Length: 228
Figure 1 (cartoon, one colour):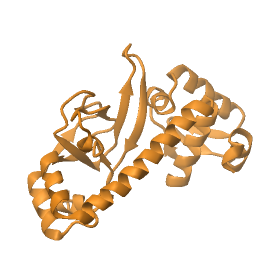
Figure 2 (figure 1 turned 180 degrees about the horizontal axis):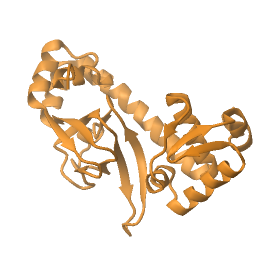
Figure 3 (figure 1 turned 135 degrees about the vertical axis):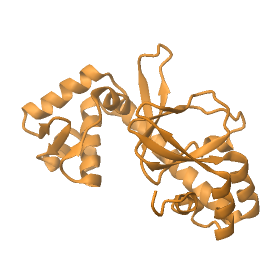
């Protein structure tokens, strides 16, 4: 882990930035590192909420499963430095409202609920930071609902590609079509057809799962004019 001790990991969490050094030390001592293989389950919807998690390495998705068991909607995908299930800590029913699974080999820091709530009681600045963070989470979910409601699959795919391009630059690696379908709220067959359409029209280049977006401005103008 190098410098990524539990204390160092917690210090990088957005809503813990105001925590005192001693508060972080106590929280770190109560926390534990966990390693997950790709596909490893971190928690399932309905499990008791006993902790939240910070991703140290790899990527973890938080998703809602369809009752038929064949489809998922990915609520968010979290990488190194990001937290997940922190919202569930505050829920009255004390059950996870969604499931979480590693989409790559991953390492996470498991932070006990009671230790975190004790820190909130002792350090009000941490509580204020948590409230601001929860408000941003709510806005992100509202944006997700708007995308699923008002954008077709091609618009959602283009938006995803442009966001990855802006964050990582050209040559980023796509998840599998099944994982991408879950992110976009559709099925793998439709994702495959839409990717082929963009490739056939020369708007993207593919090398295995690596993609180059050749005309990002044109894609936005044609498929997502409201974003411009």
